[in-house]
Image (cartoon, helix red, strand yellow):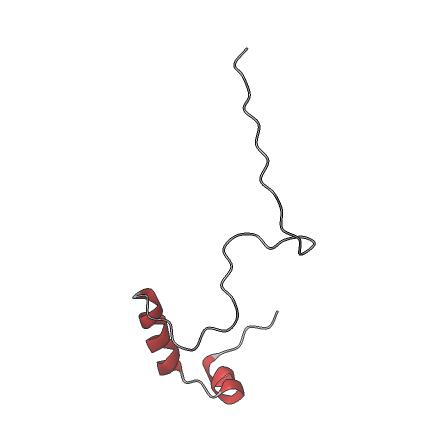
Length: 62
């Protein structure tokens, strides 16, 4: 993995160091820029794309 410095980030993505600082400040305050894309799914992804059924068992204290 290559670590990029601020100059390389600005050259490659057109994002300045000041913009990154502003985005970090906003994110820490719960402000997220951009548009959501796709469905928001909470939890682990399904392994085979199939809905799973919950199974539970109560263990007795014998």
